[in-house]
Length: 115
Image (cartoon, helix red, strand yellow):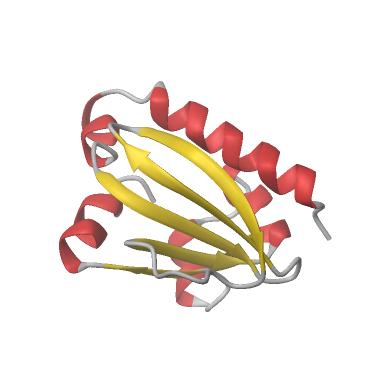
């Protein structure tokens, strides 16, 4: 089971990847949205803001997210680490129910380029 520190490190790596992305990937992440990522096995939520291809103001709170973010992810810590490391294919994991993603339709269409 991934630790809280490993999950935070994976999110930092994701933030770095988004910030250095080019072309279609960068434009897909050029949103201004609140984001939550609930790590189900650790019962911890990372909250932040996706702004111009950067993830900013990341905080943690215990339990599932108290407020509804505009982009919501839920997965285990191991799946988060594997996803960011490129070992887990998002579409397959999402289709199998290992990863949950909730967002508005327009955001989902833009995010599909990233995921």
